[in-house]
Each structure stands twice: as C-alpha cells, then as structure tokens.
Image (cartoon, rainbow, N blue to C red; front, side, top):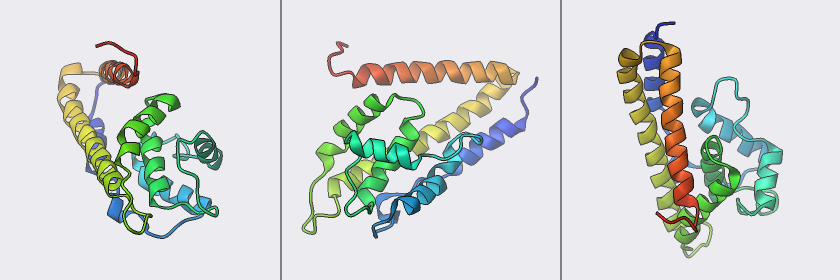
Length: 184
C-alpha cells in the first residue's frame, strides 16, 4: 500500500489550522451547550475524523468535580474554563487525565495573576497563548516529517509505525518530566 500525496496534503492542512488565542475566545460567559459547540469547532480539525465530539458534558462535569477545570459561575463558563477545556481536549489524546491535571497546575495555576477586574488573568492568558503556539508548531513539524517520511517509508503501514513510535517516545518523555519524584 503505497503512500500517496493525501497524507502530505492532510498533514499540511492540519498544520495550517490555528487555535484561538486568549483574546479570540468569547469574552462573554457561555452555557455548557454553547461551550460544547465551540469546543467542537475549535478542536474538530485536530481530532480523528471518526472521534465524535472533542469533549462531552459529562466529561466537563467530571473535570470540574476533580478540580481540573475551575467551576462555572451560575452554570456559565468563561474564558478561563474554555482555555482549560481546549488544552484538555488536545492533551487527553496522549496523556492520562492525572498527568494533564499536573501539567495544567504547573503551567497555568502559577500564571494566574488577577487583574483589577478579577475575570481576566494576564499570566494565564500568556501561558494559554504559549500552549497554542507550541501545539501549532508541533503540527507544522509533523507535517514536515510526514512529507519527508512519505518518501523514505514507502508504505502507509511503515509511516504509521514510524509516527506511532515517535509519539510513544514523546509520550514517555512527557510522563517522565511530569512525575514529581522522578530523578533525571
């Protein structure tokens, strides 16, 4: 099964996708059904085609109960919750939820500097935008790798194996870096 240009075209299309930055997130509070619709819009291009919804209402409720996502105020979700959910929607694909929580705590919790109004978080916004840039860069790198590997690997199964092995190596290193008691 030879690889055709569809893999390169698909990965290039994915690399062209852009995540919303903090200032592009709605500045009005949303109800859960609106959040779900928005998450599907933002995350849909980054998820498997047959993967269903990015997140479900029950998943979001569980993340709130587990204190991974700040609780909504009067059943409404603001920018902070939406940003958390966007990150979770992407990272849960490769890391267990406890590791996602640890990353969120280490990257976002310390970055939450309250402004005068208290609703927006300057440091948090910067950390969120940095995450978006990192994710987009990773997809662009993947597109370049896919184009190079198409020629070298020769077949779709060989390319799939190469990418799965790379993903496993990256996941293993991420888990090692997340674990607080790990000696390096």
